[in-house]
Image 1 (tube, rainbow, N blue to C red):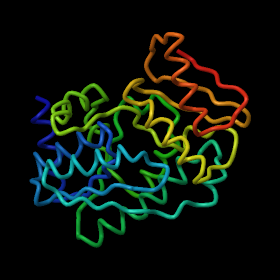
Image 2: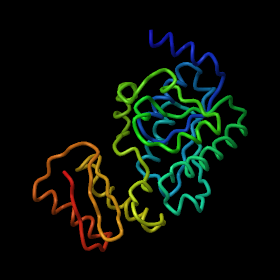
Image 3: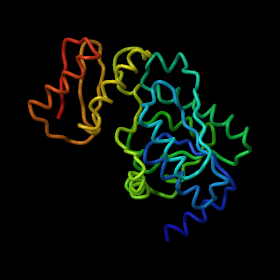
Image 4: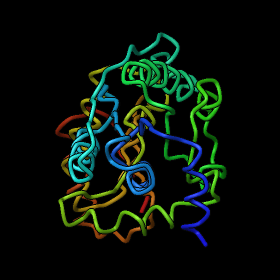
Length: 246
């Protein structure tokens, strides 16, 4: 039944550009697009701005290579509104990304832009979704009532080519009480890179005078674990307070 529904859905399109973030959801969309439209009708593009984790960019490259579709990395302008770090910064970021994706889509004569938005995303505050409507982006998972569980099932086999899905949110979301700068983004990247594979889903939240360590999934930490985390943070940040939420 799922396959029949997806077949009918994809019959509305002849070609597409997949906004491939390097996370599970957009990887699942790329897989479906290749299956139902054929790899010759599918392109993938990935934003490689400094707020995107390097491991996710590498994920995207490997995923596109696995499915044998053209992969286009691109930069965007980071708007003044985004760098000011308002609550709805994701909208300003997404708007610039989609503006560039639209240029790429038109350049190659593709039918539509697909992204990885799914039913689970509706549970969170996601101001970037407004931009999806403004640029007529389609979301195959959401429109077919699929969530993250479906995406995880569809992409689990990618581990065999060295793709590891972990954080799936950009570094700018870690900066809580100040403007977004390249220096802060790089420090967050380096710190999380040094801890990510030992402590999956770790998130380094940067506040004005302290670092708050969180985990998307509950984790049990020993005293030694906390010492290791503090040591790595102190390598890149000079802050008086570090709190670790396990």
